[in-house]
Length: 440
Length: 179
Image (cartoon, rainbow over all chains, first blue to last red; front, top):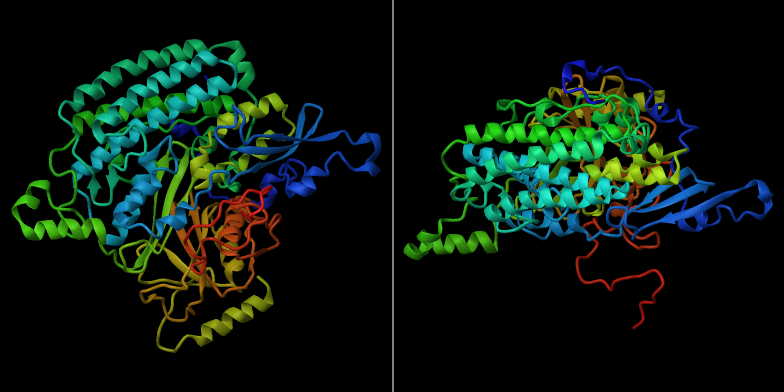
């Protein structure tokens, strides 16, 4: 097992500054990234002056390719079967969500951001809500915080289960795809029960959550906690210990901690290099300082470590969920601040003021004090942050999402350099980008 | 730090009215009103402030984005000595060993070029490309100053406040817009 579960033995941040750009240049002068426009790239291999020695070929992978996770497109400069330089070409899913956020009120904003990282929608909602709450200066009730934590951790499980499925599929373990989706579906079923939707929930909102947990939610969560662990054991049998699986992943797409830091990578990519950094532990938000869990780190920074980290993070998330089951406090599920929270449904029938108030909140929205704020959460892919600027009106003046997928994509050309094209697929898979978040 | 920028900083220091103490960090002005650690920089000292922060242990660039303050309805409360311009480039840095973050807000006018942070943090590459794509702010010494989310031949920068929201005919590279 290449995974150490004890964060103490891992590299802790040392704070020694080394020369920035030089850190990623150990691989042939930083030439891992193909920094060419389409027209220039088309000339690769077509240079008549280069003669027969130039055996480079431009290969275009995607945007619709079964293993590129949505609409990722890669321009690969190949020599034989070896990748020399590569460039992720993104934007095929760009729908201007940050521009759109400037037209939507803070209440509507969550419906927008939840569509970014569609595999882990609760995290974007959470970051958006935390940033808004920072500007509003409100504190959400304890129960809302714990419900948010419960949903986040279950979402981390479902997101990593999806990774298990796609990672298996990309590497030829096609049956794994069915198993991963099957388990994820169980988690989504619980989401549907709570929020009404399998995806794009709009459940975590500024001020708390949309509705309280339904009756009997404990039984559903307990059912999940019983169901998933044996299935993870099955994954171990099917993949973790299998020589073919290990052969396919070990030593493929390596990255060291220095490079990951320099390239702004976060999440499992940074942790796979043995660098213990997890916002839940290091900058606790919600109530993560009240639960116990381990930060999983790898030691070789390869695709196998990233697989193993995600597999074990599912187990850690279940550990957290178990503690949430015990500690879930009673109380309000949203803040009782009339400015932010619409009146309860029954009040609308009884009071004209409540009706007007309800109408106002859902048409005009509430005004948020001027200022700027940044809130970050640890999403399954790394640090997911929302930078919000308010000008005192009811729509954000600017809303920027720091999408970990977008930034983690930068590590891909470095991991891919001098790898075989077949390994490129394993590397794309292990970076686990969600294109909705990359393109926004 | 070059002599020129040092001189520019001194000039900036002098511009601050006497008797109004302004706290400085990495050569940039500290925002006393902000809840987080926020610094205000100018085009001139942007790179130096970042380089000093880097040397001081801010080992990772977490985020880089921009804000266009063209139609800002409120009044921007800025510390003394900070000159408001149309754009702000917001750089977020993190120091892992100190568990500390700092946000550098660099004020710049339209059409001004900012030095790239690529040499300090290569992770700035795609973030600066995004800022260029969305705001039209260019970064000097950036290895690949090209669009990242919009098509290569797109005209305009969508997140500018003077870029209208509305229906635009869907553009495909091969198709003509005359229908």
